[in-house]
Image (cartoon, rainbow, N blue to C red; front, side, top):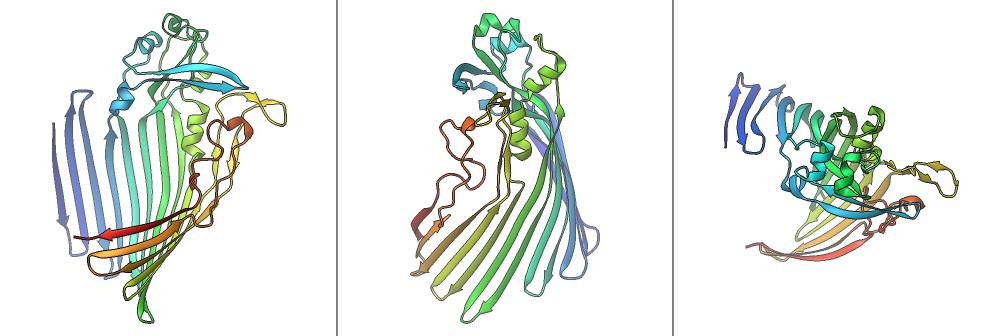
Amino acid sequence: MAAYVDMELDLTSNFLVSGALRVENYSDFGNVLTGKFAGRYKIGENFSFRGSFSSGFRAPSLQELNYSHSYTFFVDLVPFDGTLYPNNSSASRALGVSALTEERSRNYSLGFTTKIGKVDITVDAYKIDIFDRIFETGEFDASSSPALEPVIGSGLATFRINGGDISTQGIEAVVNYNTNLGAGKLGLVLAGTFRENKFEGVNLPDLNTNLTDAELEENYVSRSLIGQFETGTPSSKIIGTLNYSIGKFSAMLRGTRFGSVQTRDNNLRTLVPEGTLGYADQFFTPEFTTDIGLTYKFNDTLSLTIGGNNIFNEYPEILRYELRDFNLYSQYQQGTAGAYYFGRLTITL
């Protein structure tokens, strides 16, 4: 059940404020109260400041609450079998893992929008704090937690947990330019996102293990998961798009730059070719792709588009030997599909 109220008020002709409150009740975890406050102040006709503060939450999904699966992975060609257990399982109760609760957030933003001639500019800075973020633990076995032995035997067990607090901060900017060029219309858009993700700390409970606090913390929220959040996706993405239309024809050219990525390995292993024991971390340099499209509009109902994505067939860097399983390339920049060409017929009724 939920109830909410949303209000807006023009304090002056140039100053708008708005606010909202929402209360919700869930059979899973009880009551949640969230809210938002925002404002916009105009200076002249072509410049405005804006900002907002809000709180939020995300309830655990059905999959996070109930889904489980077994898997096999290899370390130095040695196989290990493990199972991801739901939090209502006997393995969770034996280890002492508690039920999942909702993730909560605080969101701040501050920015401006302006128009200079034919150029529209928007810039926004933001910060998002998320508390009790849901993660997946590292592997527990009977040697680290004897209480698990009756349930998992010689296998490994992992669990979903409200593992810690995280934050994201960054800047988003968009520049639009539109003008007449010859007998047609030209549009240019440059958009960029620059952000920093940070893992703020582990929410470490008392569990039935014989691990030290340091060992438990390292396994509770694994090194690879922290790395995936902090550096496993590009911290910047810049997209430049050019559109030109004349008569029944229109064309689009788009370039995308994906920032660098760094993966962090979760297991100490024999590195190749060094032959030493360590983590198989890897740095991936920025990548650039180009997309193109050409559209002919037969009439108001029918149009045909031909084009391609990543037309120069750019692939990410190859994963280092130790990290290869069923994938040869990193998945976290432009993907691994290479060039993709298409034809699309659009019918508008």
